[in-house]
Amino acid sequence: MNAPEFPNLPPTVVSYLRSVLWQRIRALVLTFDEAWRLVEIRGDAAYYGIEFLVNGICFMVLTVVLALLYGAILDPVLSASLLIAVAAGYLCYAGLGFALSALSRWDWLSLVAVAGAADVLWTFYGASSSPFAVLLRLFPPVNRTSAIYAAAASGMALPWHSVLWLAGYGAIAFVAGLAILRHRRLAFN
Image (cartoon, rainbow, N blue to C red):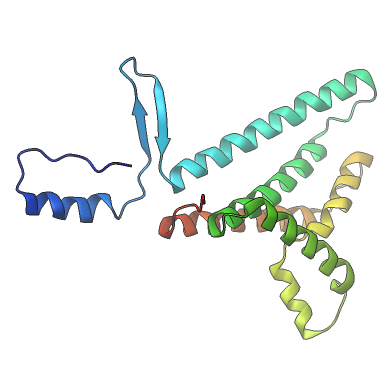
């Protein structure tokens, strides 16, 4: 992103403005062409927050469309519990993926590694009474997704503790990713 020009100002003032106002901010910058068409969006936290929200909405709309299509062909499956389960899953995995992408350029690889390790660790040590089992709470509760999706598919009551834990973990991971972006840009290389 290029620094703005400050015509008719002394060079020391321009240098100060660039260092204080431009290099330290993480602005959301929209660039338009001559016909006022949006050409580019830049900025970290605001942009990625908006993108996360829009992607989540699109994901849920696609889920509804596919569930309606499936219901029209085979068997109706669209329900509020299905949408809640899918939204909680999206929030958990997308929030975790966002936080990992803010930390590392290997975001998808690290997401698969963390989710896989969490599933294995929760499976083997989830019921452990060891003091170290408390550290397991730092990993995402991906072991609970099967129970949530099974309850949604069978029409049973959702295990709300698991739904809230899954969604809460993802929301905390997303906010952590935004906090990381306030101090560091995404690693693209």
